[in-house]
Length: 77
Image (cartoon, rainbow, N blue to C red; front, side):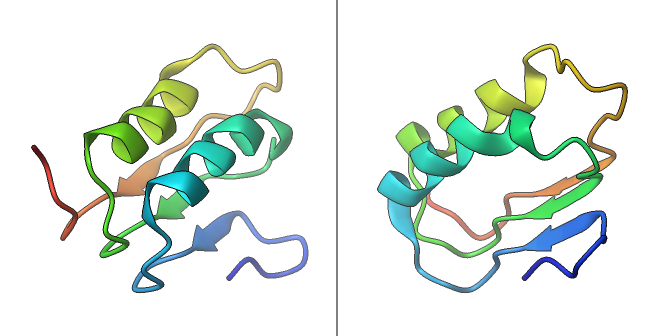
């Protein structure tokens, strides 16, 4: 999980699925200090992965950018 004032959000191995990934995609731009994100092994399919990647690749209002993203061990259709 995210530490107070930290720049990393580790959501790995939680079996969140696509619904949570879509919600996460909707708030990524509200986390301006986020530099590292792990969604590894969360039963994500193309839908969930697309939601997160779409948000990560969208222009951010804050000057910061994501430097590391781990989406490994998820299902790609």
